[in-house]
Amino acid sequence: MKFFLSVACVASLFFMCCTHQSSAELMAWYQLEGDATDSSGKGHDGAIIGTPAFVTGTTGLGIDPDTDTVDGYIKVVGGLDYSTIAAPSFTVSYWATVDADGGNENYALTQGQGTGNPRYLNQFGHANADNFKTEVQSLTGMSGKPSNIGVDIDDGDYHSYIFRYDASATENHAQSYVDGILLGQTNVTLDGDEYVGDTASEIRIGARSIWFSYFRGEMDDVAIWDHAVTDVGIADIVAGVAPSLIDFVPEFDPDINDDGNYDGEDLNLLLSDFDPDDTTGIDGPYSQEDLETLLAVFGSTVPGESSKSVPEPGSSLLLLFGIFWWFPYSRHK
Image (cartoon, rainbow, N blue to C red; front, side, top):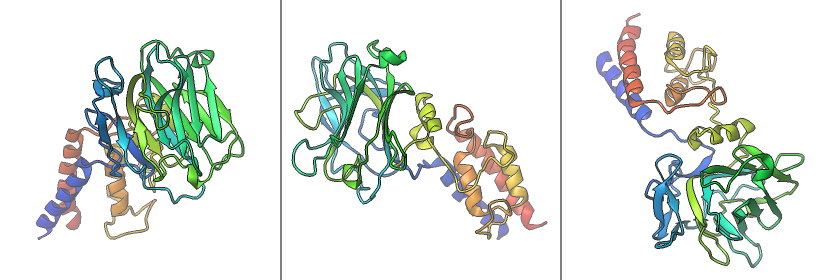
């Protein structure tokens, strides 16, 4: 019986390791790999409108909303389902190239209507091929030349664009970044009605919501978080870390030996003081929840320590063989 219980436990852990573990703070993530799927685990899938061209992205594919022969964009109907937050913080991130002849008001990611009350209008894009421009609820607008901070965005390459709004900040609530370098910041206080992703209206990737136009350039890896991503998180975005791992903070630190990695040494330490029936232990005895937290990040490095990697399937299988051996042994101790 104990053997079969061990097998059942291993099977459940295998399922947990091989399924996607999404961050609770990532609200939407569009990898644009030939479709409009939301990879955050929140179910905010979009719909392809028209025929955007799927082109080479930062990794895999991206989209070109406006070519000489086809055009189209991604629509997320009804925005995202978190409009009840009263004092919102949020972060928007995407990668893009900008056409040299893109013209003015070239927006990559937009949401909302431009008239009426309240005026739901959030826009992220470019005043022209040389300027990064953001406009949130028409209360805060920033435009600046990335070339002034040493970044040439008119070079045909993908660059990282990030807008962060921190409701808890004492000043400079809104900040925009290009390739991780602060381009501009301003003081502004928003409320729940201006939350990017509010269900009041749809989000458009690759098109403008008002005075309709397509984004003239290429886009990839669009992500929205329901918090102000940390400075370390911004650096990680630029380094190409998956949005699901940005600002990942487990309930306990699974880097038990504090060496910057979530690896077999941490697993050995956890299993040496493990009680599957315990529900309170963080520093030991370690609980089933602690074990699951470690397995969710097993094979990667601690966020902020170095570039991270998603666990390879093989590493999960080796880990599970070890657990398969350990459980029957532990019951006979």
